[in-house]
Length: 613
View (cartoon, rainbow, N blue to C red):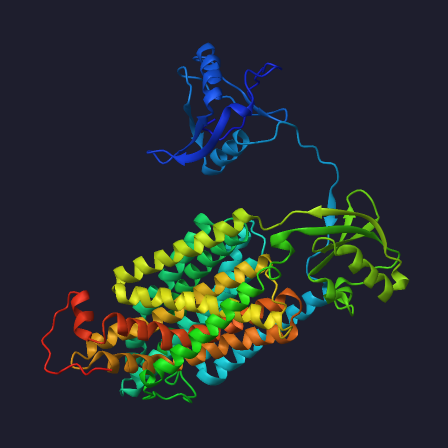
């Protein structure tokens, strides 16, 4: 009822159905013009005939929709229907999707729960503990570095980041979300972007202080000049997150949701929490020196002098990596993508899965997954062993030989399908592709098309280099496994977000310098812009690397692979913003700033001649 009172309405349903779900070709939820939701139905050719007969008899009467003996809905038929129909009502989006799923149910038999298991964590206890310690160590290193380098400014950044974490975790908890590795990846990325925003602010305040401004004036000028950079970088990444959430499924959707929440929290904390704390320190506590060390004064490096060798070197590495992907394509996909054997093993002595996975010789069978399970209602616990097809018995023999005291005994083996279906893989690819198009359109609108081309090419470069090096090192059994598992999807998506953020910061400064220096040619403008944000790029990379490297050194298993991808992504993201994105922007305009100004509809009169590169 509208009063909020819940009531039940009895419906008597015929035992023999008028029609089965086989008459429905497809059912999907859509939004109405009034903002509500409805379910759209399309019948098969034969189904349309049957549906016409049924609905002609039931005009102004309810038609029950039943699945597995449960009545889900009973819409009233307004008129005879055949090929297409809509079910309207006061549906929420979730209710409309659920009802569409019921109507799409392809099964002609009832699902019955045969067995239910309690499943142990995918990460072994030793791995979890070492990873938690690595996160703690990384956090301590980042906090220590920020405070040591920036003094009170670093303390402000740390406090703002803590508020950021609290907000993100609070929102996720209120949504009832479970934090998985894809969610952790998104959280790490947004925290990195939050620290980056604070470093941008602090370095901009430092620039204003160099000009001789007072602490108060430097604070105000620093914040006012950095707002557009923070918004552009985060809005571009937010577009990516929303597209991943909208189009993605499974781990991709979870990554997109956490990333979107984190970006909004990061912007809020950077522009409001950091500003409020800075005002408190400067105006209320009368602290005149927010910033401490200055080990990276503004440089005058001619980056363009190195653009060609850097370009050739980086794309050569990309080609080697792509070649490795091609040659190793049959072995790089893990069980999550290919499926394999799942063996049930009984035992008399439980041994931690982290110890079992380190058994000598076990790596000869390829990827191995181990998890303890217990049938609900029983005390007996079993060990589930997952391997590639036809490798489970060889893996069991190795474990039996290494741990005879455990008395491992095979109880059965089945073949399992991929947990990351081809649909999820396709959705992930389409989502990233659409995200790149979204980036191009936004950057072209906010800046102009040359910036957009540079940003997209740099992002593709970073993903290819990271994935290629991961596979290359994995094929040589160096540093990483080289196996693609479900969490690796999130790691790759994380690189997309990090690369975009880094590139937009550089581009925003190029745009600013174009405005401030109308008498300077394009090459000099780009060099000036890169040198102006160089300290920020290095410091952001250092702080993020402190956390990523500690996770790589002290983590284990998938955590090691995950952190390796992040480390490579951080390095290549910083590199590409300088040596890939910026030169592409330069060459797109044939090295002539007048073409840039013309694209931005800002014609100027020049008293200088553009020199060729």
